[in-house]
Image (cartoon, rainbow, N blue to C red; front, side, top):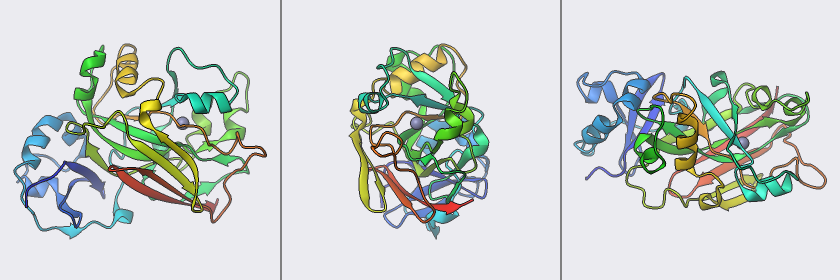
Length: 286
Ligand code: ZN
């Protein structure tokens, strides 16, 4: 069976490829006879080599992938960026002007979790934000817009879970802590290699809450698209292999509803990017 688009996952800290229609896991270090190490960051650093290696794999038998056994595809990124107000629909519902530069904040790496992680609720103002998530392959500085996708390993769907009370606790607001509680940065279930995706700048993305659609967009509505964000960030900081970018959420979050709606224990969020992946997050009492 020919190898399809490269899919990359991480389990118990070890790099995995996901192959075939049954989603079988192939341990990268074992399958490559040690050519690649077990460390996910080694794969990100050598992503073009990995792409060539993956193309040589046939229908390699491995465990059928239990999505709940996976880590986040980049489990310990050095840097995690979030982009705020990056869809017109979300800026408008927030009553804020359309940004003219990417509004960038940090999500601390200890908030990263696998795609299907439970969300422990702290307080009564926890909100959802479905987002396209990008993982950097070989990074760099001053990456040109038209070369930006060459520096992307893959993409996944994720949630930028937000504690609104904490996000706006001080003036001026400081987003980073409010978006970094335990498991508040789930994404997955795996990365889809972005190299061969003709529609990578126009993906259909939805979020449902207890089965009801609350967010529904195309990523071509991003104000700053993936290329713009990478060019902007790399002009300021060095992007590193495995770094993660949450690219922003469309309209439909809970805080902007009238009246506001926040997550409760037992709520279930399902986040989907068509052709890329689906994650399910159950909300639990802290
Ligand atoms: Zn966000």
